[in-house]
Amino acid sequence: AKEVEENLRSPICCIMGHVDSGKTKLLDCIRGTNVQEGEAGGITQQIGATFFPAENIRERTKELQANAKLKVPGILVIDTPGHESFTNLRSRGSNLCDLAILVVDIMRGLEPQTIESLNLLRRRNVKFIIALNKVDRLYGWEKSKNAPIRKTMMQQTGDVVKEFKMRLNRVQNQFQEQGLNSMLYYKNREMGETISILPASAISGEGIPDLLLFLVQWAQKTMVEKLTYVDKVQCTVLEVKVIEGHGITVDVVLVNGVLREGDQIVVCGSQGPIVTTIRSLLTPYPMNEMRVTGTYMPHREVKAAQGIKIAAQGLEHAIAGTALHVIGPNEDMEEAKKNAMED
Ligand code: GTP
Ligand code: MG
Ligand code: NA
Image 1: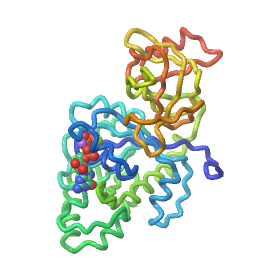
Image 2: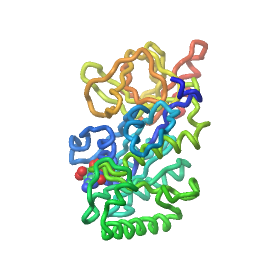
Image 3: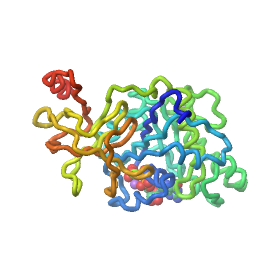
Image 4: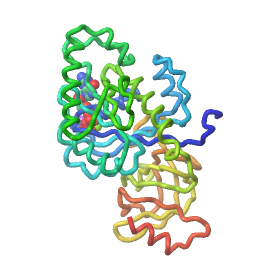
Protein backbone atom coordinates (compact mmCIF):
# COMPACT_ATOMS: atom_id res chain seq x y z
CA ALA A 1 0.00 0.00 0.00
CA LYS A 2 1.11 3.54 -0.73
CA GLU A 3 0.71 4.55 2.88
CA VAL A 4 3.61 2.45 4.02
CA GLU A 5 6.01 4.56 1.92
CA GLU A 6 8.43 5.05 4.81
CA ASN A 7 8.54 1.29 5.35
CA LEU A 8 7.73 1.42 9.00
CA ARG A 9 7.02 -1.73 10.96
CA SER A 10 4.23 -1.88 13.53
CA PRO A 11 5.16 -0.43 16.90
CA ILE A 12 5.23 -2.90 19.79
CA CYS A 13 3.30 -1.53 22.74
CA CYS A 14 3.44 -3.12 26.16
CA ILE A 15 0.47 -2.69 28.51
CA MET A 16 1.51 -2.66 32.17
CA GLY A 17 0.17 -1.78 35.59
CA HIS A 18 -1.08 -3.04 38.94
CA VAL A 19 -3.21 -6.19 39.14
CA ASP A 20 -6.85 -5.59 38.13
CA SER A 21 -6.28 -2.07 36.85
CA GLY A 22 -8.00 -3.28 33.66
CA LYS A 23 -5.20 -4.02 31.17
CA THR A 24 -6.76 -7.13 29.66
CA LYS A 25 -10.23 -5.61 29.74
CA LEU A 26 -9.00 -2.60 27.77
CA LEU A 27 -7.68 -4.96 25.12
CA ASP A 28 -10.94 -6.92 25.21
CA CYS A 29 -12.80 -3.69 24.60
CA ILE A 30 -10.71 -2.91 21.51
CA ARG A 31 -10.77 -6.50 20.22
CA GLY A 32 -14.42 -7.13 20.94
CA THR A 33 -13.38 -10.26 22.87
CA ASN A 34 -13.85 -11.73 26.32
CA VAL A 35 -10.39 -12.98 27.20
CA GLN A 36 -10.42 -11.55 30.73
CA GLU A 37 -13.50 -13.47 31.84
CA GLY A 38 -11.85 -16.72 30.76
CA GLU A 39 -8.80 -16.18 32.96
CA ALA A 40 -8.41 -18.23 36.13
CA GLY A 41 -9.43 -15.94 39.00
CA GLY A 42 -9.59 -13.07 36.52
CA ILE A 43 -5.80 -12.86 36.77
CA THR A 44 -3.43 -12.75 33.82
CA GLN A 45 -0.63 -15.28 34.26
CA GLN A 46 1.18 -15.16 30.91
CA ILE A 47 2.39 -12.61 28.43
CA GLY A 48 -0.02 -12.13 25.55
CA ALA A 49 0.19 -10.55 22.13
CA THR A 50 -2.48 -9.11 19.86
CA PHE A 51 -2.09 -7.49 16.46
CA PHE A 52 -4.36 -4.55 15.71
CA PRO A 53 -4.34 -3.80 11.96
CA ALA A 54 -4.35 -0.16 10.81
CA GLU A 55 -7.82 -0.59 9.21
CA ASN A 56 -9.34 -1.49 12.56
CA ILE A 57 -7.63 1.44 14.23
CA ARG A 58 -8.89 3.77 11.52
CA GLU A 59 -12.42 2.47 12.03
CA ARG A 60 -12.26 2.90 15.81
CA THR A 61 -10.91 6.46 15.60
CA LYS A 62 -13.27 7.74 12.90
CA GLU A 63 -15.23 9.84 15.36
CA LEU A 64 -12.19 11.92 16.18
CA GLN A 65 -12.35 13.01 12.53
CA ALA A 66 -8.63 12.91 12.35
CA ASN A 67 -8.48 11.46 8.85
CA ALA A 68 -5.40 10.08 10.37
CA LYS A 69 -2.68 9.11 8.01
CA LEU A 70 -1.61 5.77 9.36
CA LYS A 71 1.91 5.04 8.21
CA VAL A 72 2.33 1.90 10.27
CA PRO A 73 0.69 -1.44 9.35
CA GLY A 74 -0.85 -1.67 12.82
CA ILE A 75 0.13 -2.01 16.47
CA LEU A 76 1.29 -5.14 18.23
CA VAL A 77 0.16 -4.98 21.86
CA ILE A 78 1.83 -7.09 24.53
CA ASP A 79 -0.40 -7.81 27.55
CA THR A 80 1.43 -8.40 30.84
CA PRO A 81 0.25 -9.64 34.25
CA GLY A 82 -0.03 -7.14 37.08
CA HIS A 83 0.12 -9.63 39.95
CA GLU A 84 3.17 -9.06 42.14
CA SER A 85 4.59 -12.54 41.51
CA PHE A 86 5.14 -11.88 37.78
CA THR A 87 7.89 -9.26 37.85
CA ASN A 88 9.91 -11.39 35.40
CA LEU A 89 7.10 -11.26 32.81
CA ARG A 90 6.70 -7.50 33.20
CA SER A 91 10.42 -7.16 32.76
CA ARG A 92 10.33 -9.36 29.63
CA GLY A 93 7.54 -7.23 28.16
CA SER A 94 9.22 -3.94 28.93
CA ASN A 95 12.42 -5.27 27.37
CA LEU A 96 11.08 -5.76 23.90
CA CYS A 97 8.56 -2.96 23.45
CA ASP A 98 8.91 0.35 21.65
CA LEU A 99 6.40 2.16 23.83
CA ALA A 100 4.01 1.38 26.65
CA ILE A 101 0.66 2.08 28.26
CA LEU A 102 0.77 2.30 32.04
CA VAL A 103 -2.75 1.59 33.30
CA VAL A 104 -3.96 3.25 36.51
CA ASP A 105 -7.37 2.59 38.11
CA ILE A 106 -8.82 6.07 38.63
CA MET A 107 -10.57 4.93 41.84
CA ARG A 108 -7.39 3.48 43.35
CA GLY A 109 -4.59 5.71 42.08
CA LEU A 110 -0.98 4.50 42.09
CA GLU A 111 -0.42 1.03 43.55
CA PRO A 112 2.76 -1.00 44.18
CA GLN A 113 2.98 -2.65 40.74
CA THR A 114 2.14 0.65 39.04
CA ILE A 115 5.31 2.01 40.57
CA GLU A 116 7.28 -1.14 39.82
CA SER A 117 6.16 -1.01 36.17
CA LEU A 118 6.96 2.68 36.00
CA ASN A 119 10.48 2.00 37.20
CA LEU A 120 11.00 -0.86 34.73
CA LEU A 121 9.95 1.47 31.90
CA ARG A 122 12.21 4.26 33.11
CA ARG A 123 15.16 1.93 33.48
CA ARG A 124 14.76 0.79 29.88
CA ASN A 125 14.05 4.31 28.65
CA VAL A 126 10.69 3.27 27.22
CA LYS A 127 8.32 6.15 26.43
CA PHE A 128 4.86 5.61 27.83
CA ILE A 129 1.45 7.14 28.36
CA ILE A 130 -0.91 6.74 31.30
CA ALA A 131 -4.35 5.23 30.71
CA LEU A 132 -6.54 6.43 33.58
CA ASN A 133 -9.01 3.57 33.48
CA LYS A 134 -12.47 2.91 34.96
CA VAL A 135 -13.85 6.44 34.53
CA ASP A 136 -17.30 4.81 34.29
CA ARG A 137 -17.02 4.14 38.03
CA LEU A 138 -17.21 7.84 38.86
CA TYR A 139 -20.48 8.36 40.72
CA GLY A 140 -23.25 9.31 38.30
CA TRP A 141 -21.18 8.66 35.14
CA GLU A 142 -23.32 8.88 32.01
CA LYS A 143 -22.19 6.15 29.62
CA SER A 144 -21.58 6.94 25.99
CA LYS A 145 -20.30 3.83 24.30
CA ASN A 146 -16.88 4.15 22.64
CA ALA A 147 -17.08 7.94 22.58
CA PRO A 148 -14.02 10.20 22.44
CA ILE A 149 -13.23 11.39 25.95
CA ARG A 150 -13.77 15.14 25.50
CA LYS A 151 -17.15 14.54 23.92
CA THR A 152 -18.21 12.27 26.77
CA MET A 153 -16.90 14.71 29.41
CA MET A 154 -19.15 17.44 28.05
CA GLN A 155 -22.15 15.19 28.70
CA GLN A 156 -21.33 14.62 32.39
CA THR A 157 -22.88 16.58 35.26
CA GLY A 158 -20.87 19.14 37.20
CA ASP A 159 -20.54 16.70 40.10
CA VAL A 160 -19.04 14.00 37.89
CA VAL A 161 -16.59 16.45 36.36
CA LYS A 162 -15.67 17.62 39.83
CA GLU A 163 -14.97 14.10 41.06
CA PHE A 164 -13.00 13.38 37.91
CA LYS A 165 -10.80 16.42 38.41
CA MET A 166 -10.26 15.61 42.07
CA ARG A 167 -9.16 12.04 41.29
CA LEU A 168 -7.08 13.12 38.31
CA ASN A 169 -5.35 15.62 40.53
CA ARG A 170 -4.61 12.99 43.13
CA VAL A 171 -3.03 10.71 40.50
CA GLN A 172 -0.97 13.60 39.14
CA ASN A 173 0.32 14.31 42.63
CA GLN A 174 1.20 10.66 43.11
CA PHE A 175 3.18 10.68 39.86
CA GLN A 176 4.83 13.89 40.98
CA GLU A 177 6.00 12.05 44.08
CA GLN A 178 7.68 9.60 41.72
CA GLY A 179 9.39 12.50 39.99
CA LEU A 180 7.08 12.64 36.97
CA ASN A 181 5.04 15.48 35.53
CA SER A 182 1.79 14.32 33.94
CA MET A 183 -1.11 16.06 32.26
CA LEU A 184 -4.32 15.31 30.35
CA TYR A 185 -3.13 14.50 26.84
CA TYR A 186 -5.14 17.21 25.10
CA LYS A 187 -3.63 19.87 27.34
CA ASN A 188 -0.09 18.53 27.16
CA ARG A 189 2.20 20.74 25.10
CA GLU A 190 5.48 19.35 26.36
CA MET A 191 5.25 15.82 25.05
CA GLY A 192 8.23 13.88 26.24
CA GLU A 193 8.89 16.03 29.30
CA THR A 194 5.37 15.65 30.63
CA ILE A 195 3.61 12.28 30.47
CA SER A 196 0.20 12.29 28.79
CA ILE A 197 -2.83 10.98 30.67
CA LEU A 198 -5.62 9.37 28.65
CA PRO A 199 -8.83 8.74 30.63
CA ALA A 200 -10.72 5.65 29.51
CA SER A 201 -13.24 2.97 30.36
CA ALA A 202 -12.66 -0.62 29.36
CA ILE A 203 -16.32 -1.38 30.05
CA SER A 204 -18.11 1.33 28.10
CA GLY A 205 -15.24 2.25 25.77
CA GLU A 206 -15.06 5.99 26.40
CA GLY A 207 -11.60 7.26 25.55
CA ILE A 208 -10.64 4.21 23.49
CA PRO A 209 -10.59 6.18 20.20
CA ASP A 210 -8.28 8.72 21.82
CA LEU A 211 -5.99 6.00 23.13
CA LEU A 212 -5.61 4.28 19.75
CA LEU A 213 -5.14 7.44 17.74
CA PHE A 214 -2.67 8.85 20.23
CA LEU A 215 -0.53 5.72 20.23
CA VAL A 216 -0.28 5.49 16.46
CA GLN A 217 0.31 9.18 15.83
CA TRP A 218 2.82 9.49 18.65
CA ALA A 219 4.75 6.44 17.50
CA GLN A 220 4.94 7.41 13.85
CA LYS A 221 5.80 11.00 14.68
CA THR A 222 8.51 10.49 17.26
CA MET A 223 9.90 6.99 16.67
CA VAL A 224 10.49 6.84 12.91
CA GLU A 225 14.07 5.72 13.22
CA LYS A 226 13.28 2.98 15.71
CA LEU A 227 10.30 1.81 13.65
CA THR A 228 12.02 1.74 10.29
CA TYR A 229 11.90 -1.85 9.14
CA VAL A 230 15.22 -3.68 8.83
CA ASP A 231 15.86 -7.16 7.44
CA LYS A 232 18.03 -8.38 10.28
CA VAL A 233 15.95 -10.73 12.39
CA GLN A 234 15.32 -9.59 15.94
CA CYS A 235 13.11 -12.04 17.79
CA THR A 236 12.40 -12.87 21.45
CA VAL A 237 10.90 -16.04 22.92
CA LEU A 238 7.91 -15.21 25.14
CA GLU A 239 6.64 -18.60 26.24
CA VAL A 240 7.25 -22.31 25.66
CA LYS A 241 4.03 -24.31 25.31
CA VAL A 242 2.51 -27.60 24.30
CA ILE A 243 -0.27 -27.06 21.79
CA GLU A 244 -2.51 -29.90 20.74
CA GLY A 245 -1.79 -30.87 17.16
CA HIS A 246 1.44 -28.89 17.06
CA GLY A 247 3.54 -30.42 19.85
CA ILE A 248 5.99 -28.16 21.60
CA THR A 249 5.77 -24.62 20.35
CA VAL A 250 7.34 -21.32 21.29
CA ASP A 251 5.48 -18.04 21.25
CA VAL A 252 7.79 -15.33 19.99
CA VAL A 253 7.67 -11.67 19.22
CA LEU A 254 9.32 -10.86 15.93
CA VAL A 255 10.55 -7.29 16.32
CA ASN A 256 12.33 -6.98 12.97
CA GLY A 257 13.04 -9.05 9.87
CA VAL A 258 11.21 -12.01 8.33
CA LEU A 259 10.85 -15.59 9.56
CA ARG A 260 10.24 -18.34 7.01
CA GLU A 261 9.11 -21.91 7.16
CA GLY A 262 12.21 -24.09 6.88
CA ASP A 263 14.54 -21.49 8.42
CA GLN A 264 17.26 -22.99 10.52
CA ILE A 265 17.18 -21.36 13.93
CA VAL A 266 19.12 -21.46 17.16
CA VAL A 267 17.58 -20.82 20.56
CA CYS A 268 19.07 -20.71 24.02
CA GLY A 269 18.18 -23.92 25.90
CA SER A 270 18.56 -25.02 29.51
CA GLN A 271 20.73 -27.93 28.33
CA GLY A 272 22.70 -26.03 25.71
CA PRO A 273 21.94 -24.35 22.39
CA ILE A 274 19.01 -25.77 20.42
CA VAL A 275 19.47 -25.90 16.67
CA THR A 276 16.30 -26.75 14.79
CA THR A 277 14.23 -25.98 11.71
CA ILE A 278 10.97 -24.05 11.68
CA ARG A 279 8.25 -26.57 10.86
CA SER A 280 5.34 -24.19 11.00
CA LEU A 281 4.72 -20.52 11.54
CA LEU A 282 1.35 -19.71 13.04
CA THR A 283 -0.28 -16.45 14.01
CA PRO A 284 -3.59 -15.80 15.71
CA TYR A 285 -6.13 -13.97 13.55
CA PRO A 286 -5.84 -10.17 13.72
CA MET A 287 -7.56 -8.77 16.83
CA ASN A 288 -7.16 -12.12 18.59
CA GLU A 289 -5.01 -12.88 21.60
CA MET A 290 -2.11 -15.26 20.92
CA ARG A 291 -2.22 -16.82 24.38
CA VAL A 292 -5.83 -17.98 23.91
CA THR A 293 -5.64 -21.39 22.34
CA GLY A 294 -7.81 -21.38 19.28
CA THR A 295 -7.30 -21.54 15.59
CA TYR A 296 -4.13 -20.12 14.15
CA MET A 297 -3.32 -19.03 10.63
CA PRO A 298 -0.40 -20.88 9.03
CA HIS A 299 2.11 -18.83 7.02
CA ARG A 300 5.05 -19.50 4.69
CA GLU A 301 6.68 -16.37 6.03
CA VAL A 302 5.88 -13.63 8.52
CA LYS A 303 7.23 -10.10 8.52
CA ALA A 304 7.84 -8.03 11.66
CA ALA A 305 6.38 -6.87 13.89
CA GLN A 306 4.21 -9.84 14.84
CA GLY A 307 3.49 -12.31 17.59
CA ILE A 308 4.13 -15.79 16.20
CA LYS A 309 3.77 -19.34 17.38
CA ILE A 310 6.60 -21.49 16.04
CA ALA A 311 6.46 -25.26 15.92
CA ALA A 312 9.77 -27.09 15.60
CA GLN A 313 11.46 -30.17 16.96
CA GLY A 314 13.46 -30.04 20.20
CA LEU A 315 12.05 -26.86 21.66
CA GLU A 316 11.11 -28.33 25.04
CA HIS A 317 14.14 -26.89 26.81
CA ALA A 318 13.98 -23.47 25.17
CA ILE A 319 14.30 -20.62 27.67
CA ALA A 320 11.65 -17.91 27.59
CA GLY A 321 12.94 -14.37 27.44
CA THR A 322 15.96 -15.17 25.27
CA ALA A 323 16.61 -14.28 21.63
CA LEU A 324 15.87 -16.54 18.67
CA HIS A 325 18.47 -16.37 15.89
CA VAL A 326 18.14 -17.40 12.26
CA ILE A 327 21.25 -19.06 10.89
CA GLY A 328 22.15 -17.49 7.55
CA PRO A 329 23.57 -19.55 4.63
CA ASN A 330 27.09 -18.22 5.18
CA GLU A 331 26.99 -18.23 8.93
CA ASP A 332 29.22 -20.30 11.13
CA MET A 333 27.12 -22.75 13.14
CA GLU A 334 29.42 -22.83 16.17
CA GLU A 335 29.51 -19.05 16.27
CA ALA A 336 25.70 -18.89 16.10
CA LYS A 337 25.37 -21.42 18.94
CA LYS A 338 27.80 -19.48 21.08
CA ASN A 339 25.92 -16.24 20.48
CA ALA A 340 22.62 -17.89 21.36
CA MET A 341 23.91 -19.02 24.74
CA GLU A 342 25.13 -15.55 25.64
CA ASP A 343 21.57 -14.42 26.40
P1 GTP B 1 -4.15 -8.58 35.73
O1 GTP B 1 -3.81 -8.92 34.35
O2 GTP B 1 -4.56 -9.76 36.50
O3 GTP B 1 -3.06 -7.80 36.39
O4 GTP B 1 -5.44 -7.59 35.71
P2 GTP B 1 -5.82 -6.54 34.57
O5 GTP B 1 -5.08 -5.27 34.80
O6 GTP B 1 -5.67 -7.17 33.25
O7 GTP B 1 -7.34 -6.21 34.91
P3 GTP B 1 -8.60 -7.00 34.29
O8 GTP B 1 -8.75 -6.69 32.85
O9 GTP B 1 -8.48 -8.41 34.69
O10 GTP B 1 -9.79 -6.29 35.07
C1 GTP B 1 -9.92 -6.44 36.47
C2 GTP B 1 -11.35 -6.19 36.88
O11 GTP B 1 -11.68 -4.82 36.69
C3 GTP B 1 -12.38 -6.99 36.09
O12 GTP B 1 -13.39 -7.38 36.96
C4 GTP B 1 -12.89 -6.01 35.07
O13 GTP B 1 -14.20 -6.28 34.66
C5 GTP B 1 -12.81 -4.71 35.85
N1 GTP B 1 -12.60 -3.56 34.97
C6 GTP B 1 -11.58 -3.39 34.12
N2 GTP B 1 -11.69 -2.23 33.47
C7 GTP B 1 -12.79 -1.62 33.94
C8 GTP B 1 -13.43 -0.37 33.66
O14 GTP B 1 -13.00 0.44 32.83
N3 GTP B 1 -14.58 -0.11 34.36
C9 GTP B 1 -15.09 -0.96 35.26
N4 GTP B 1 -16.19 -0.60 35.90
N5 GTP B 1 -14.51 -2.13 35.56
C10 GTP B 1 -13.38 -2.46 34.90
MG1 MG C 1 -4.80 -8.95 32.67
NA1 NA D 1 -7.14 -9.21 36.51
